[in-house]
Every structure is written in C-alpha cells, then in structure tokens.
Length: 328
Length: 308
Image (cartoon, rainbow over all chains, first blue to last red; front, top):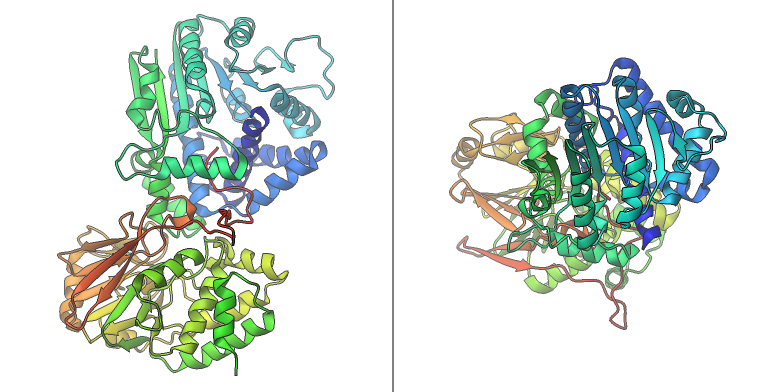
C-alpha cells in the first residue's frame, strides 16, 4: 500500500507539469510571483522532470507520458488546486512576520522554492515517506538550478537526521501514520510558538480514520497558533451522487489504491468536522473557489489557453474536491 | 460492394478493422453525406440521441433500449468521438448503419468532430495507438467535414449539437453555410456546434472559449421566427440524462452514461412520435465483459484521471 500511495506523487507531478507546459501555471497574479520568479517557476519544474530521468527512467517515462496527454479539465483542476492552496498560504504569510510551514506528504512539490525567496523570515519543512524524500533530495541536489536556488551542495556531507538540513529548509523522512515518529520529528525541526502553516494536499484521503484524526489532533495541540490547509477529494453526499463510489472502484481496480474515508467525510461539512477544535474553519469545494475566487481576467486567460469541452464535467469533478482552512 | 453486416458484427465485438476497410467506409460515407443539406429533413417517429464520446458499450445499450436501427429512425446530435476509449469503433458503427440504412439514421456534426479538438481529446491518440499511424484519423476527419450541421423533424423540431448563433437566426440562413470545412473558431458554424443555453438576458460569452451563451429570449425568438416548437440539442453533460428549459422550448439530451467512466450520470434518448409527443428513455452504463463474464477495464491508460 505504501508504494501505491507514494506513486500518486507521479500523478500530482505530471498534472502540474502539464498545467505548466500549457500555461495554466504559474499564475503570476494569484501566486504573487514577480516576472523573475514566474520564469523560474517554470524552469524549476522542467528541471525537476529532466533530472528525474537520471534517477528513474521508468518514473520519468510515466510522468512524461501522462503530462503530454492531460485533458483541459485536468489542467483546470490542477490550476485550481495549486492557486487555491498558494493563495491561502500567501494570505497567512503576509499577515504574520515569522512563519514556519510544515508540508505533510510533500512528494515532489516545489512550492517552497518561490516562497523561501519571497519571504526571508520563512522556515519550511518538507516531510514524506523515506523513498519519496530520498528521490526529492537526489533531484534537488543534482539539478543545478534547483541546487542553486536553495544554496545546496551537490553532495550531502552533513551529519544530520534530515536529508536536507538548512537553517530555513528541511527535508525529512517520516511515516505520518506513525504518530510517535511524527511527533519526534516535529519536536526537532519546528518551534512550538512560531505561527505554523500545515499543508496536507491529498494526504489524509489515503490514511485511515484513526491515524488521520490522531495526526490532526497531535499537530494542532503541538503548535500554539496555526493554519491548517487541506486539499482532498470528498465522496459526495447527495442521494444520487455516485462520483465517490465510482472513484473508489476505479482507483481500486486500476491501481489498487484505497481512500478509506472518502465516503465517511463525504461532504464539506463532515470533512471539516475533523478540525472542530479550531475556532475558525472555512471549507469550500473547488467549484466554489473557481466561481468566487478566480477573477474574470484570470478566467479569460485560462479560456485562451485551451477550449474547455465540457463545463458540467468540470463542475462534477470540482464539487468533489475541497479546500479546508482551519485557523487556531 | 462492402459487406457492411460483416463489418458491423466485427465492430460490435470490438475487433480490429483493417485500414483499407476504414478508408473505403469513409469514402462511401462522404459520397452519401455530400448529398445531404446542412439541415436534413427527418420524419417522425424518430429517436434523438446526444453525445456518445467513444463509449461503444453504452452505444450498443442505447440501440438495445430504443428499438435498434432495423426498426427505429435515429438522429445523433454529434460528439461521437473523444474521451471514451472506443471512439473509432463508435464512429465507424454509426457510419456502417448510415450506409446500410441511409433513411434510418441522421448524423449531425458535434464540436468534437474536428481535427483540432480530436488531437487534444483522445481520438487522434486512440487511432495512433490502434494502427501505429494517423491515416485512419485523417480518413475520419474528412468524413467529419461532410456531416450535417442540423436536422429538422416534421418542420417542427430543430436539432443541432450545441445551440444558436447570433449571426444566423433562421434555418434558411443556416442552409447557406458552406459547411465542408474544418470547424472555424468563430462565426455561425462554430456557434451551432459550441453554444449553450443559460439563464442570461442576451447573447453572452461562453466559458468554453468558443460559441455563445443564449437565453430564453433568443430561444423564443428562434422558435417563433422559424415556426418550430422545440430545439433539441446535446453538448452538455446532464446528470439526469436530459433537461428541458425555457418552458419546454429547448431540451438537452445526453447519451453517454457514467461519462468518462467517472461522472456517475445516467443517459437518455428522446423519442418523438407522429404527434410530436416526447418520450424519454433513461439508461445506465454497463461494464464491458469478456466471453466468460469478467469485467474488462476498458482502457489502455494505466489509470483513470483523478487528482491524487
């Protein structure tokens, strides 16, 4: 199961690369990127893919192929997911001077690169399964522009429990199902009193209910102030809604991937109920975000990139993915 | 002469059709379609079908649930190809039926029946995967250029894939379009294939990037000016299979159940009888099975598209 879940990172990566290659991302407006950082955003991701080839031709082939055959409806969804999370992060970063970010199940995500350059007081921790972060470490150190952007050395010479152990950026291995291991890790690489952004982007959906609730509770009690940003699918709660059941069966059949709580937390409200300890919880589905938070100028830009053949399909899909923000 | 019944049997079994056979099918189809007007006249009773999108097994269910082409007259509102995994077989099956029973079946062009869209949405890739080259895709695209843009049933029901155009508000104007070309990015021909009905006061920009949104006012005007009582169109996924709007002046019919093997919707066809009564038949997706009844995952893709 662990390997099957890890491999979903290749899906996330190929989706993001597809959205970048067609021009959906970056969104200099919503991601608040300067001209220089917008250019780098594309270069960093391209370089990550090219460097991946050196470490796993198989993974590269898979990602490269999926990237080339991505449908516009997927590009829209990837765009919404990325800018939705980034906008939430940016809002908190602008409002707080010194912040630490903990990205749970980071996979190949590279959003730390622009953020670390934009916010000089930011500290950032990437955490994932050992195999995932080892690959990420190798790629970050091998690619010249990725290495330079982080100020990394090519060889890892430091004696550290982390794969990357810098003042402001840490990359660490951890099985987030193991709460003892997770707690021990967070004790060493984060500070309790600093306002903390916790990101879980398609992480909790693969965990069992007990483990995910324990992770939420433990982390929320660990940091005195924080913002938890979570992006996940929900099964749907309308009487005739079969999206979730079909999704479970498709994923099980095609790759033996399970989402144990998809139908338990099948609505926005039920999903958000897991953060009931937080005084301020906002949850939207991605269709609401598309309609309420993406300005018309931006939507016009998206329309000019590709013809969207089916808006209703976009709606069906995006009403089954949510973005939850819990502040405490 | 081609043995159409034999090709039909092969297609229904999902068997490979030789390139040469596809070429001749496409050539014969062009000859036949060339003689049709932009807006074909069709008599009742007739069954109107919406988007198919390469879901061959569901197309077979459609015929089964609605009488079959031997006994029933059909209008297909376009979007035969793309997205599903059997675009080629679905389109060829419809062409074979058209050649075999020319009066029984009318094919209207959808916004996916173009070179540009099929390159993005799967049909092109499917052909290359199945034949190792794109020849068969090119033969099919040549047929697309000859498909009608609409149909009119008993001078009372106007059928089109997408909707109306601000540039042409009468059926007679639509008859004057030079349709034998790739669908342009704008203008009446594009709008007929791309537009959508919506609760808008007047013509508005479409979020799809092509065509327009039109409202009750535009529909009422069209119905009155052309002396018809209904616009039947497809083009939009409807979870319940069909949706009437504007006091019954327009209907959307959708015939691809569980669209993209993912959406969980039901499908519908609309039968119009001699008194122009409307009767909807709803059907659900079936899982493709092999001879021993095991489910076949209908895909060469290693996975379904989800955000993971």
